[in-house]
Amino acid sequence: MTHTYNVTGMTCDSCEAKVKSSLLMLPGVTEVEVSRATHSATISMEKHIALPALQKALDKKYSITAMEYNEAAEQAKSWLATYKPILIIFAYISTIAIISAAHHNTFHWMQAMNVFMAGFFLAFSFFKMLDLKGFTESYSMYDIIAKKVKAWGFIYAFVELGLGIAYATNFQPFLTNTITLVVMGISIIGVLQSVLNKRKIQCACLGAVFNLPMSTVTIIEDGLMIVMSIAMLYTII
Image 1: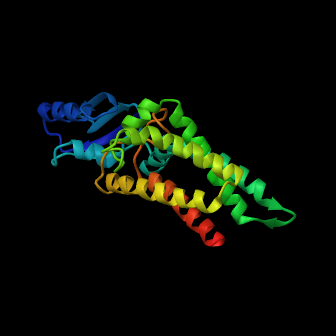
Image 2 (image 1 turned 180 degrees about the vertical axis):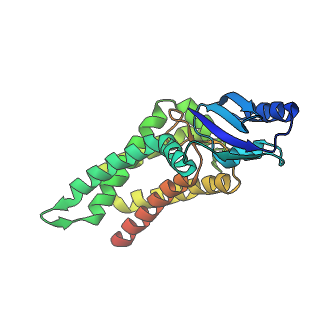
Image 3 (image 1 turned 60 degrees about the horizontal axis):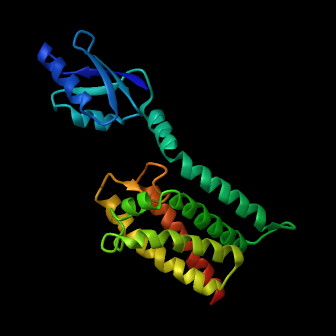
């Protein structure tokens, strides 16, 4: 995609060259054209780069603002494009869970959560299985156990598969939900540390197939599993 920006603060040819070289150094930027005469910069990028990131790349004497597009709309489009795979998966799983739990004008929340958990773990383990080695390497970058025991990433994919089957067959609900609570509780610690420290690393939730960044979406994903497992344990006890 290509956007044109208004750039102020350029007073000479050297400024023009400096702005261009600074913007070209940004990851994802493929081409930059800067004009001091029109106070503009036309930037071609692989995907949308937020204005704050562009401004940060420039010297403080230069100011860059959007000229031909709506920044908020572009950021929303970029977010949707980035998380499209996981949003589609959640939509499919949620739809199946809702359909399975709706019977004769009543809605069985426990059944909906059980089906959702089964679909979640089966789907997510499937993507991890497509490239176990890639998942293990990505997971070891932030998970507190996988950092010390790399084999845990390999084992974790099969744990998710086992949990998916357990939820689908309603096997030992108390044991299944307890294991889920422990596993996801440990997993979310590494996710929280990475997000709070603003580490720009790949999230391994869908294995190495999709390049998803670690973000609050990952926290919500893990947190949702923890909340559901607690709710289901509460009904069992």
